[in-house]
Every structure is written in C-alpha cells, then in structure tokens.
Image (cartoon, rainbow, N blue to C red):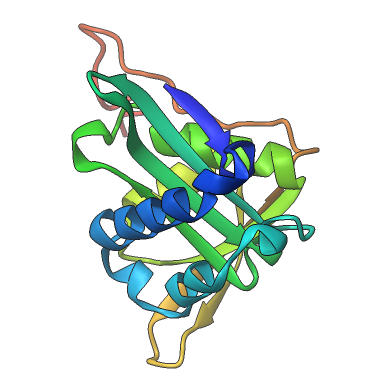
Length: 174
C-alpha cells in the first residue's frame, strides 16, 4: 500500500485524480460526505492544498491495470473546516485508515474532528492514530458529538493488550 498526497501527482493529472477521490469519498464515506465537508472538497484546488492545515491523501494498492484507490482523507484548516476519511469496504480493518490519519497528523502537526457517539469504529480509529477526546458538544440537530484532537508531539499511543489463547476474558474477577 502507498499513501501519497494529491499534490505529488503531475499538474495535468490533478483534476482527474481530484474527481476520482470525490467519487470515492461520496461512494464509501457514508453519510458524513453529504455535508459541508464534501462541498469544501469539491471546491478545493491545487492552491487550496498548499494552505497550512490542508491536506488530501490517497491510499493505493497495485492492481492489474495500475494503482487502485482504496482509501482517501481530506482535512482542511486542521480539521476545523473539513474532515473526511473513507476506506473501501474490502480493505477495512487492515490499517488503511490508521495509516491515512497517522500520515495526516505527521504532515499537519495537529488536527481535530468531531464524531457521533454511535460512530465507534471511527472513534476507535482516531484514538489509535493518536487523537484524544477533549469535550462533548451537540450539533444543530441535537446529536451529541465527541470532540477529538491531537498533535504530532504526543507520541503516546495507548494500545489494548491482545488476549492470548487460553487466557480468561475477565482479568479482574470480583
């Protein structure tokens, strides 16, 4: 798998790659891409990606006909204006989202996002990538959101100990 910025592609290929990423995020990003974040991605151009705190990354694998897009992430203004991430369903739970978010955090230095409390896979991904929960807020529809933020200086990544074969699931019986 290769993670690359859309700016690394030649100028003449940029608009085609941008359209490909937009289609991908619309198709595999779920309900989150139907909002303002997706519109900001649609309005983005090469100049936008040169602004501080803005990045568009793609994850590809080698296919028979060339690189195949399997994941994408768009962050604008360190996540305050827009935060999108999607991984193709066939490649989920293989570390693609983690690689995208980790690279975003390393490139940008800091970022933040909001997650609904019912989006547990996304919240777990953010925690694994180094983001921490900072507060709870409500969106305009009244849904409770968890505010997540992180910076590249925080090198502590809390990992759960995997359960070994034969080990009991309850570590602290009462």
